[in-house]
Image 1 (spheres, rainbow, N blue to C red):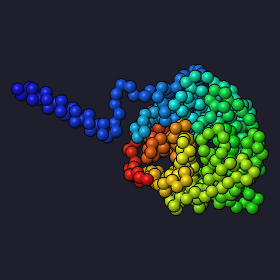
Image 2 (tube, rainbow, N blue to C red; image 1 turned 30 degrees about the vertical axis):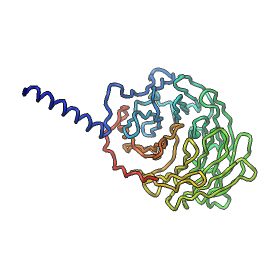
Image 3 (tube, rainbow, N blue to C red; image 1 turned 45 degrees about the horizontal axis):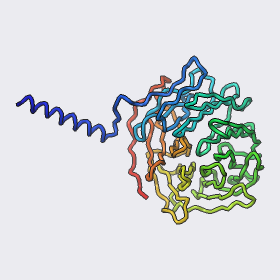
Image 4 (cartoon, rainbow, N blue to C red; image 1 turned 60 degrees about the vertical axis):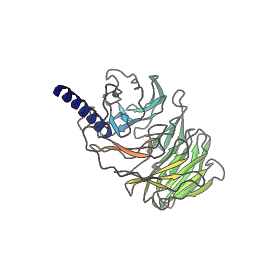
Amino acid sequence: MVSSWITSAKLVLRAALLVLLTGCGIVTGSRAPQPVSASPSSNAAPVALAGLQLGYLWQTGQHNLYPILGVTGATHYGSATLSADGNVVNAAATTSPSFSSILVLNKDGTIQEWELPAATTTALAAHVPLDSSLIFSPSGTSAVVVSSSAHIAYVVSGLPSRPLVASTALPSGFVTGDITVSDGGALLVGLMPAGGVGVQFGFLSETHSYSPIGAVQGWGGAAFQPGNTANAVIVADALSGQLTYIANPDATSPTLTSLSVSGLVEKAAGVAVSPDGKWAFVADGGKPQLVEVSLQASGPAPAVIPCACTPQQMLPLTSDGIFAITKNVAGQPDWILDARTAQPRTFFIPAIAIPASNQTASASPPKQPDRIMR
């Protein structure tokens, strides 16, 4: 009788422990994600991990590209994607439910595209300046490789399976970082005006010479709506916090509409648009928050998305609504926005250990504010 009671008590305790662990967000099981890795002795592209949905991030301190594994709120970095031979200067990636596309800038000035899971490698361009930055479009079907020193942009369209590259000279006065690309390969470019005050922005594409559209006091980011036609782009003013919706930016007379942010944005530091094109997200560099703004007529009022971080950018990592909102710093966690649900939320990825061992460092989770519901 006593033995039976002890056995029952053990079962109850085990069940209670399981509930406790599940409630705390601890993920266990034999089917945990395994790192995406590349063979150090081969230049072949790595094999994509089935179910990898949170994208990749370039780590400047580690000088490598790392996959984000796990689920929202319980993530970690996997092993480095690129071989550790020091040949890669910069890399960026975009991920969708069906593919991942990685752009790699090598020390010899060549740009390559890796398509996963097809494991194909395509040479895109040569003699590319090594100071070039790599930027993907909202859906990852296009990208732009930008060199501020050479004042040239290499627009890559047709990703992932049929990439085409076209080089475009940037207008005089181009400001480093003040550029965004559409899914169709069109560009919105920021320039320093002749008077040196504020930033002028305009439309540029392979078939459309640069044409100015408007100006902001300071560049606070810009993003095209997803889709192969560049029918709309949103621009933020870093100083006023104001958002402007620009319809038909390639037209002779684009339509500019001011979007209300209800005074919530203190210092715009980046802009993104939801995959369905109904919401804009503004990274607020002046407060620990992002602001969600409806792009629909008579839509809900702007709402705050809290973050225990200082947002610095809105970098699309996946085509379905995952964005990097901080720029990586050695030893610090990276913060992500998950906009795939009706109530977007932020979460962090523990920092990679400073010794380059491809292991994740242990980190205590920062206190996460409650989501302000809209």
